[in-house]
Length: 214
Image 1 (cartoon, one colour):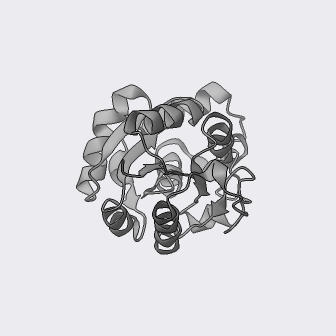
Image 2: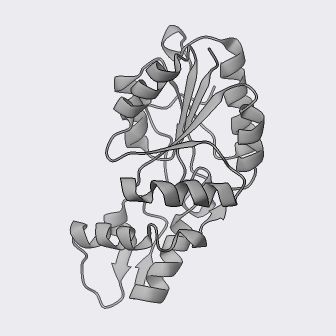
Image 3: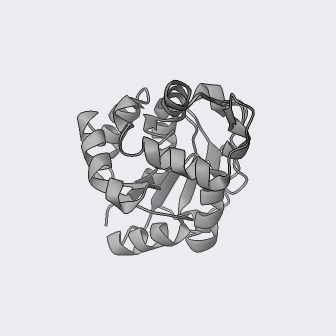
């Protein structure tokens, strides 16, 4: 069976936070400080009020799917996926509500990225494990920008290689490497080489001792 690449979308394939911040500013007079990966600290109403968690999620629901057209392609992402598709099956696993799935498919298609898309809510470990089993992949790589998802995948699917990527430079420099990822790479040209090497080696992650940043 072919290897499997399971890839997040926002801040991996498409820029999101920079456009979300612009929309918050324009439509809601809210500052979005990208130096904080914790959104409870990043979103700051200019009237000095404090946002509840429900309000923060409400703004996110306002962005998806209505404002998805603002998002732009991460440099070299399309070319990397095109090359990797010659080696592996590819699934885009995105944490959006299910009603956004068709919007995400169309959005990615508009950027020349046409692969299976699955929506998820919560940790990604269980869906990654299911996808690996479904595809029968002996080697799989998971790419995501959030540390908690790497921890979830490490727990639920330890055989999967985990690559931490934050493609937004204004945010990446403030976020440490995810401790449960095998590597941190924020550029798709280097990431493509790293992923290809894992596929070509043909060994699952839990049989190897892969150092951070290898």
